[in-house]
Length: 560
Image (tube, rainbow, N blue to C red; front, top):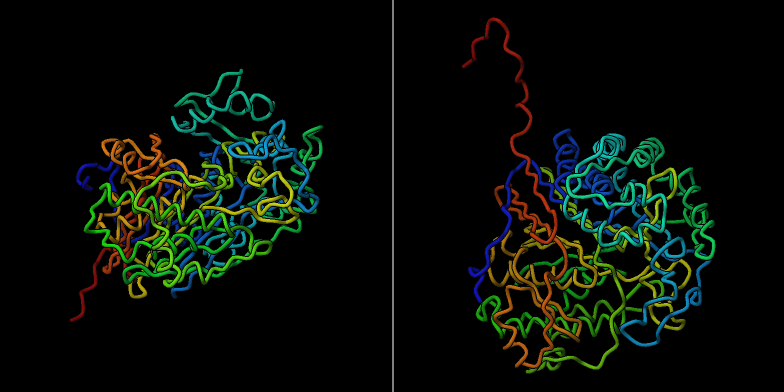
């Protein structure tokens, strides 16, 4: 199969004044508004994320967690870890597992780790956004929040994407009167085009505009959240106001690998992406991937085998580096990749290995750049669709359900421990050549995130695709069991099965990627793919030249 055999569904946009790409048109519009008002990429990214809390409430919220990857104008890479972690009172035996073996080994009785107050971990999104904007942004926090407040207060027409999420989860949403009243007024799920107004959340955002993250991490909003967690009855959770006061973001050093003369930069553990994308690219590097062609049996088999090795190594050592020892330097080394060549098999097929941990596929991503060289790639979530699936009364806040990502069995690598961050596949990535930034990208999709980002990088650097094609191209995924393929690869399904792969046909692999490409002349090109409501907003033009003013009645002569 050639890249010419698929046609991108969306169109890119270019400009030199700034670029905002998010997974919702109104998120991109909010970021664009902030750039146009004189904000930088950090202001626009965080303003876009606040807006996404309003228009993508199933994906992200202030009581969630995530990662920001910033590149500063002087070329530094800053990773802000705002991931959620287990409350201080949590311990390995807080849940009762329903099974000791896959595929149900991560499930808990009465779904206590997935739904309700007992599913809520200590959130980090708001702390991360406010701290990062205060440190790197130009505008006031109130200015950055203004578009989100307006959207919450005045409402917006919901998309098919949001309406589908409400309908699919109506039974769980109906369990909580507050969230049901918001998303299913009169008992019927909102439909595409219906207007969603979030007055309580608008008031919450106004409080944050005045108080910053302290409103949640110790203040009035935190008191409301902790009170709701404690009054869950049999489903009461462990999160307390003290947990919120004690939460700290972590600044971490980026992981840098190399591939065919490019630098590949991503986040370190607890994220898998920086380590395992570098590892998988190192494994591919000795092979002439370009000569194999995109979407051929040979290239798909090699990519699948490379992913399998990446997941085998991820299972062996991944997670919060405060709790798990991870030999990063070995995993990203070229020498280790040479040893991995012997693990590539001529025939595919499932391997006897435990299933990977669980991560929700329901996340959002933003990629933003300004004319001065600030670039942000950020992935944030409340974990599952609509998080813990309740609203904190009077606030409009939908909390995360991050506790479902822990293994409910004691004594395992992913077991619950106080203050432990769970592993994440989030992949806010950047690609450089000779020290110059060429691409920034990311996407939602749980365990399929970093393998999808890996494929996009291969599309760009090996197959020479333009940005739009690279992120929309058909994908595959495996962790060593089934090989998932998107519909465009259906003609190769029989050949893949003959090669030993247990093929599973899926509508899409991972979520909506968005990305920015950077040209030497200063032009930026943004792209968003068909797997989400992704939208590009490019800023061209700019302010008047210095000295330009309204013309007087008599124009003075131009001096020679």
